[in-house]
Length: 366
Image (cartoon, rainbow, N blue to C red; front, top):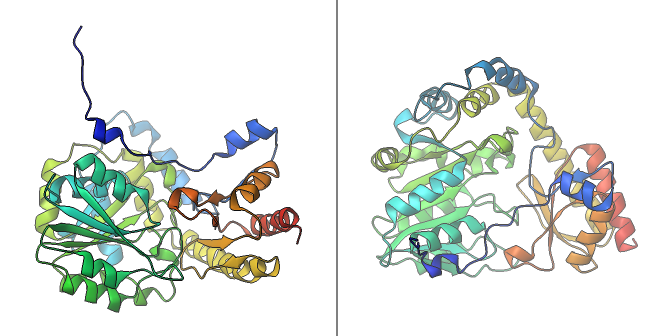
């Protein structure tokens, strides 16, 4: 019998651990009603317009989608004002992160730089690609260490990652600071700005470098339809890349990675301004509510430009997390990010937010 071997070093890291599902908690505690505020999903669900478009296209699912999703690329181009030649749609922005590691970094030679307490995907992709991943320390209170990223880069640095707004802290880097960082990185080093939460910043023109994209030749921006557009379950995102690099990725990728329904849903979502604007209103008012309500029950809460806030409760985070589960509320303890004292809570509907604060106050005895 033939045996297959696997490089042992690939297995020497913890896999990504997603948040608990509503179904898991219902079954575990015998609860009828469960609120999930753990995975930064859209509090309003998916747009009714999107749902109608998907239903309309169900009879097409036996067909292959058009490769590289050209219709969606055209819509994104019109929506954000970036040429089609610089837009690559992926099976979530995670697919593009993975491709960047495999196409840009050289195993055993290159290094990639990020900062501590950030998205585990960067570290995982580096490990799988055989590429050194370097983490710089944050400052206090959890600032984005852009100066440290610049100092850590050398001639073998293939990419520098910045998540802005940051997960899990909610902090965002200004356009000016990102422009400076892009300008001081070594030749051939990409600055990859992961903008999964960019829709929730205010004011938007102060935080995204996309508006000045043509001024950079080493900038990659990643975006997703999972958050503001409510399409997390369909797995669709995109990257804005230098055209030459984008061409390499397109030539090397496997075909049909974005499914037909995901493309149609994303096009509909981009054009549903009413749902998008309602989402922003709900998130921003809920964010303001959390910033006021959490300190009143003794929690230390950190400013956020995302659709979640990070806070430190007055009792151990794991104890609070488990106590809230028994009350049917799922939040995200941040031990896996190296922030064992912290909890991240997604902004929900007004009713969900109030129920969470009430339950948390009971847990904390506030």
